[in-house]
Amino acid sequence: MRIGIVVQRYGQEITAGSEAYARTVARLLAEDHTVEVITTTALDYVTWRNALPSGVDMDGRITVRRFPVDFERTGYWHELHLLLLGGTDLPGFASLPAARKRKLAERLNTWPLGLQEEFIKRQGPYSSSLLQWLSEHEQAYDAFIFCTHLYPTTYFGIEQVARAKRYLLPTLHDEPAAYLPAYRRPFHHAQQILFLTAAEQELAARLVGAVKGYQLGYGIPIPPMAATSSEAEPYVLFGGRIDAIKGAEMLIDYFLRFRGRHPDLPVKLYLTGTQAMEIPSSPDIVYQGRVERDELYRLLRDARCFIHPSSYESLGIALLEAFAVGVPGLVNEASQVLADHCRHSNGGLWFEGYEEFEAALKTLLEQPELRRELGRNGRTYVVEHFSLEAYQRRLRTLFPLPSGGA
Image: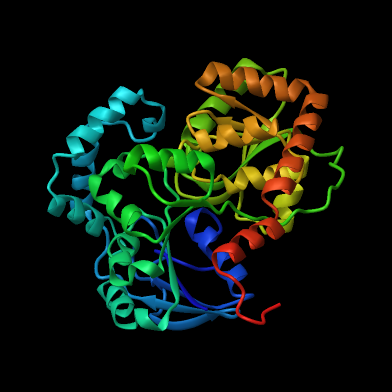
């Protein structure tokens, strides 16, 4: 099969989020099929500025076709975004009562389709040449996987190919923009919806109605167990995108409050990943920057726990990687996906508000045997449900090996 994967940006320098997920899918499918990634030349998800050369490149055995973005995101879109929010607090949206969310949905239902599509288009990245390529060459492909429902590459791109070839990998979050009625169309016009978790599928049913779905999940390498370092200073870890929208600002605030209230518990907060916000200067906060996988596993093994403060997750790869090395999680209950991972695995704790955060973190720091038990449970959960082997089997159910393939 020749499979096209359409995603808003792509590259080895993008280590988290739906783009990293798309790269994993591409690399696994390329073991059995001819895979092409169809993407833009942008790297910055805020401006969508053209940063890479347009044209054809190779990522191992994967062909990467990059198309220029027509325009950057401007203040005009930010004004549209404020209009959409209507005073709604974006970072705390997932925790709002259902009645508040219904009011947002009712208001957005009054938006004309033209205004909704203007919001989607100006959000970016919009590439007319990418859309033209899909329209002119769709017959050369057997299937297309459109990754992330939110962006123009999916919303407008999916209409350029035959319905029987449309696979939507939405990575859906409970966020204000997802309540736009226009976003229901890609879900109902796709041949198959590929969900990462049961919680994501439940959210889709609530937002867009009943759709044909398949729980694809994810697969991660399972590193060997290794002893922790007895010389490591006590620390907790958060890794991914250091961004207020991902809960990093809240985490830093909570952690510094915790340190002020518990000076008898010497612990630091280590941060790894891409910095998208200012990190306050404090001897208790250590920013490690982006780290390679082996270094990440070392940092995880020595951590007292992995804290994931985000409300907006459709999978939570960073938490699963922590579980894989036997480290317990502490997650924001506003993310049903993250809380479900902890509940189903018995591999971590969850919090709503500072008081629960304080109590949970204090428990994890003071009870090493509980930490070890939760860590063992989390690792077992990942081995059973999120191994690369199991993931590859699910992919091959969707996209069978060529006739005569191994």
